[in-house]
Image (cartoon, rainbow, N blue to C red; front, side, top):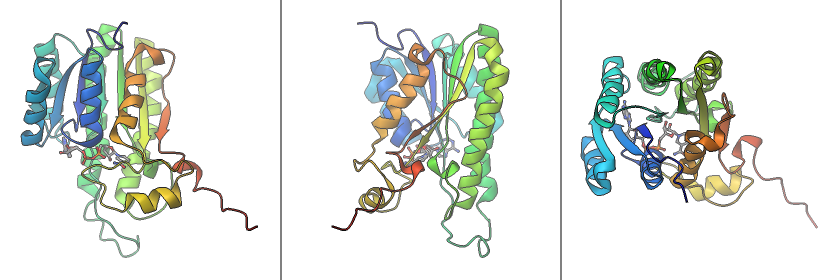
Length: 253
Ligand code: NAD
């Protein structure tokens, strides 16, 4: 059977851990060459060593546009092109349960990584892909970008921004046969999810199964591959239905 990403070149930012790591593993299983981009050199290099020549680690802080440009140039130089850009790196920010009492000290950092980093990733990859006449860009938003509420107000603002930004540039890049979509994960165990997942799943998710990084990687594979050739500007929640609201209350007998 033909592999879904045979001969494709991908960049996965935040590729050293969690959702990014699961995606790097799945993309390479499906035949892609993958640049693992992360600020965490230790985990990034270890993953590249584990997966072999189909991967390479490039230390990158996505909050720095020069480093993002260097990352895209590196992928093209090292693997001879770029077909898939997964702008996935993200941080959660400070936990405050009152906006009125929030000092918003995390705002600039959260926006720089979660929104500006996605924008520059799209721009540098998009410039190359537009000339090439093909490509798939995937951005990581969150159910926090779909659902209003607290805590993590800076994070919610950034992730909502990713959704609107993704739809906006999907309109421009369509002309060049470059697709731009985003994934909105919810309640996936990873380094930055610090809360009680079991409690959250039972209270917030219609589907009672626990989501895992590979569930999000499967969505990324769909959006990266030709299976989604007619899909652009999509926001794909991978959240067990959390964006709909929690499970319905059971009727009293
Ligand atoms: P994670 O913390 O396991 O992975 C995030 C990775 O991003 C880490 O390897 C980290 O080193 C890297 N990173 C952080 N800042 C960076 C920067 N400036 N430049 C480059 N790399 C950087 O968490 P995860 O859950 O796998 O997060 C992946 C994405 O999924 C993030 O955008 C996150 O906001 C989003 N997300 C996660 C969940 C969830 O439940 N886990 C839900 C919604 C959205």
